[in-house]
Image (cartoon, rainbow, N blue to C red; front, side, top):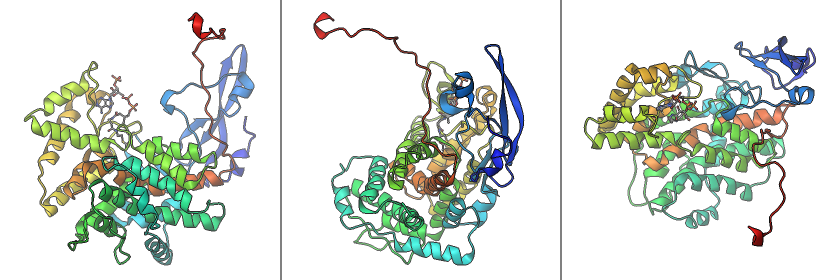
Length: 444
Ligand code: ACO
């Protein structure tokens, strides 16, 4: 059990995270064990079971880690019941309205809002590192054109570790962070250009982060491309909203892989792979596919909802439900407002938005969704915006990657500095055969 006062010594804890003030008692096998309660700055309480196995021989079983705190973290706070999301204490609504993605990236990485000089310097560094090594172009040539851009991006990010030295000093860590943030949009745009058989466009240092990405995506060597500042701003907003979300599947993957002291680039590549799945970052692509299917079959929103509720049917209302939010996801609320504005600005069809709003309306009045506290999550409206601004559906998850990158790196940095970090190594309850003798092939 943690000694009294040990909490204060842990450098990774938030400044006022309390010491183990209380404890819980576990009665097991005729003995009584006191388990300290650790309290966070927002009064979240956790049972510290660090010594559980050592003292009692027991481990915990928590499929999907719904009750397991894997670390102390001061990066992101979520209150799923109240629909609150804050980065380093700042409400997401304020950051969405007033900040920029690179400013938020700095905030997540280094804990405070940057001064104007710091932000200018950081932006300059990132702008100067957007190009990929020329040899990298051959890397894309080896990928099949039909490949999904997510695994291509994951492979490309892992391959950065073959071009650049290990981030083993503070200076190299900073360089690696700058490189990742700078080159990720270039990698994403190259992956897309490769998939449609167009030549990649070199980055333009006279453009801001999001405008440069849009340029690399949509410009061709044959014709000029005008970046609409409203579109660049909405993209910046989307990246801010996706920038961090504490210990989700991909961030936990980054922490787990990073705990083995693997290269930062390879570690981030593992986060990209985790994000690809349809239950995580891949949901925004599935939302559009679902809305398009409903659009094809007139009036089928109700039919679709019936399927989503049917236990014998695997259909789910994509973009609905969240492991943590048991009320409206604050990011979805921000995006719902932006949706209409963007669609009007770019003159896209509002058909899918109308279907999404209709689905939301019926679902929020339906007992099934009400009882289970299922509300729209960030992906419910993000896909509609991406589609309106011309991002192809198979690039949606890559867009999520661009946004989540600073969050992943912030968690990697925090983990690296936390004296409590050990290699991640969960245990299991074994349910297989007990010992049995090998049967030779000719006797089976
Ligand atoms: N449609 C229909 N039913 C649902 C949905 C949904 N979208 N989500 C959850 N449920 C039901 C489940 O069937 C379950 O019902 P039951 O209690 O009768 O068995 C109950 O609600 C609880 O669901 P779980 O799957 O146990 O919840 P969990 O926390 O494990 O899953 C998840 C959360 C994966 C997000 C889930 O809600 C889901 O699959 N949603 C659709 C996919 C999606 O939008 N993912 C994006 C998440 S946000 C992100 O990653 C950025």
